[in-house]
Structures are given as structure tokens and as C-alpha cells.
Image (cartoon, rainbow, N blue to C red; front, top):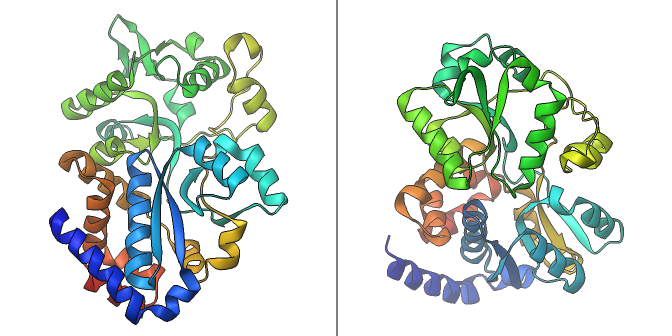
Length: 337
């Protein structure tokens, strides 16, 4: 479907909503939705817009945003109404306070499943070494990941300088005694360097071990495999007051699993009072991780915008989104695709 046709259909949907969907519009009205500045959030916000407008007769306004700026605006100004994909770890203390004081609400604590940060290996390596199925087991075999500059050492690839995860990986490297085990912590130099190393290893069937996160197009394209830690998460004090800090501020990091990544759909108190059917939709809407990764691959390969990707998702995965809405709403949405 072309953008021009979609624009025409969108206008038609709004007109039809004003007439045929008056009752549902009374329950929904105008909804402001944050369109965050990364692909999965752009996709999610546009799916929300299409479903709410076509299915419920809402009038949706998209508001550009990012995690901290959107949260601050919602917390201080009660706008926008909805943050579809808020990575809450970044604002957890403030969000907890806002919820306790009744300014903000979490409507959905799982808008994407299977997400998280951690340590990954290539699909080929995981298939070739099924016995090395945890981080701790793999750490005993640095010889399987020869470092290009010294093949007697194993290469573990961390994050580029300046990323928060650079500190975390460096401190976990120390916590697990990886240098003594024969490992070298490799700086990829940049985001492109990190992605390029993964792509090269995956396409050549070579071993690679390092940090990445999900959902991303790279995980979807190369089916990277995250290794679980045998050790449990060692507590917030160890993580927040040591692991996540610069090395000079973390004298004794303790081994730990990666902290749980949390994404939530967060709304304002005003929206909880006026959102009606839209609130019900947001509470049910959840993207399976493998589907989200497939969509991110689609967006990358086709240079698709969030709007184009949203239409593609709705056309391609009706078995996913139809469970979020009633059969009547699903029929209205389908009629607009």
C-alpha cells in the first residue's frame, strides 16, 4: 500500500469515525501518544494510532519524544497521555514516586516480550557447542574465541566508550575474573564497529561473544543467542552502586546476572480518567519478541518508516493483534488496511 493511499484511507477512517463511531469516540476522544525516536517505539506508536483511530474512533495526536524527555513532560505537564514503550529502568526512581503520588500509571508491564540486555553468541556457535549453555560454562573456554591481536587470549566484546553498558561490562569482566581466565575485553570503537563484528562473524560462521540487547534488527537478522547466567542477580546495591559506576567507584564488584530490563506502557492520571476503551486496548497490547525483531529487520531492509511498518505489521500479523481487541474492532481495523 502506498503512502498516498494510506493517507486517503486515514482521512476516510477519521470521517467514518466521526459518524459511525460517535459512541466509542465519547469513550476515547483525543489521545496524545509519544512517538519515541527508535524503530520499535516508532512502530508501536503508529500501530496504536491506527488501531485507536480505525477501531475505536479516537483522534490520535503523535508527539515526538525520547525516554527521559517524554517521562519528564508526562510527570510535570501530564502530556503526552501515553508512552507506549518506556524503558523504565532509566527513570525507575522517579516513576515509582510518580505512581505512588497518582500522577502516572503503568497500564502494561509487558508491551514487548523476550527483551533484555546481556551476553550473546552467534547462532552457529550455540549449535556447535550445546554443552556451553551458560555464561559461566563458556568463560572456562576462552580458546574458542581467539583474540585477533593475541590468539592465546579469548575476545569478549563490550560496548563503545561513552555508553552506560561500557561500565557494566567492564565491571562484570572484573567480577567474573575474566582476565585471569584468559580473556581480553575488546572495545568495538563505535556502534557500527559492534554491529559490524557481529555481522562478520555471523555471515562467516565464526565465533563471537559479547554484549548486545533485544529487541533489535541485528538479533532478528542473525538469530543471536543470549546465554543465561548461573549466578542470580546480586541485588540493586551491587548493581546501582558498583556495577553501573566507573571502575574507580566500584572497588569490589560481585558476580551478577544482568539486571532485568523493563519496558512499560505508561499513562497519565488524566488519561486513566478519560481514556475509556483506549485504556483497555493499551492494557492488552503486547508484541512477541520474535515478531518485533522480524519487524525491525523489515524496517532496516526496506528503510521503512514507523507508519509504513505499522501497516505492514497489521497486514502480516493479524493473529497477533486480533487478540488485543474485540472481533468487531478487529474487523474495523482490517477494513482500513
